Amino acid sequence: MPDFRPIVPSDAGLLSHYFNDSRSRCCDLTVGGTMMWRSYFGSECCVHGDSLIIRVDFYGDKAYVVPMGGDRMRALRAVAEDDPNPLFCVVSREDLGLLAGCFGSIGVTAHRESFDYLYLASDMRDLPGKRFSGQRNHINKFLSVCGDWSFRVIDPSDIADAERFIDAFHQNMSGLGAEEEQRSRCLVRHMAEYGCVGGMLTVGGAVCGVTVCEKIGDTCYIHVEKADRTVPGVYPMLFREASRAFADCKYINREEDDGNEGLRTSKLSYHPVRLIRKYLVRPL
Image 1 (cartoon, rainbow, N blue to C red):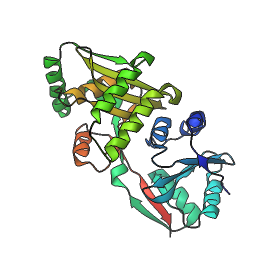
Image 2: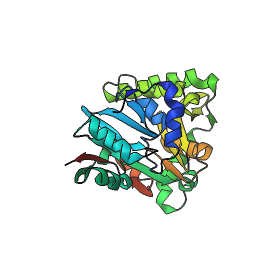
Image 3: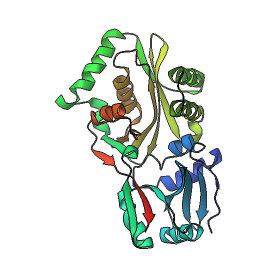
C-alpha cells in the first residue's frame, strides 16, 4: 500500500528527479508549481517501488497524479488497492491510454480551466509579424512613457522588495487572490531552493513588475507574473523581458487561466502553439 506523507520543502530534489523525466510540459509537474501550492492542495507524495505518486485535495475530492517513473502500471495497481474508485487529476492526453490499460473502462472529463498555454519562446522574445502588433504597440507605449526603466535578475538583496511589491499587488484582495499572494511570496523567498529564477521590472527605480520562472527540459514555466496595471504596457513588457532573460529554450508555458475570461483572452492573444489539455479520469 502506498505510504503517503505531506510534501515538504526538502522534497525539491526528489520532485526534480521525477519531473525532469516528464515529457508532458504540464505546469503541475514542476518543483516551483508544486511547492507554491502544496499547502493549498494538501499535497502528499510517496515513492512506491521506483515510482513517485502524488495525492492532492482536488477541490474537495481526493485525487491522484498519474505515477511517474519506474513501473507505472504497478504503481497504479497500488493506488487501486488503496482506493477502489480513484480520481486522477491533471491527466495528460498521453497518459489516458495508460489508465485505460490498467482500469479498462474509464470516464474522462476535459478540465478546460486548467489547460496550459504553450508558446514558442522565439515568438515571445521577438514578437514578430502582424499577429503580435498589439503586444508591440503596448510595449512601445511603455517605452514612450517610461524612459528610466530596467529589468534585472532578482538576487538575494532584491527579495524583500519583490515581496513588498507582491503584498501591494494583492492589497485588499480576498479568497483565491489573497491565497495566491501568500503562495507567490513564498516562492519568491525560496526561488533558489526550488531551482527557480526571478526577474524584476523597475521604472525610475521603483518596482513595477515581478516574475518567477522555472526551466525544465525544453520548456520555461512562468509561475509568478505580477505587474502594476497603472503603468501602460507593463505586462507585455514584463513578459517580453522575462522571455529574453530566462527562456533560452524552445517553449514557454504560461500556465492556466483558471476560468478567468479576461486572462483567457489575454493568453490566447499571444497565439499559443498548443493548449496542453488536462483531464479528470475515474475508472467506470
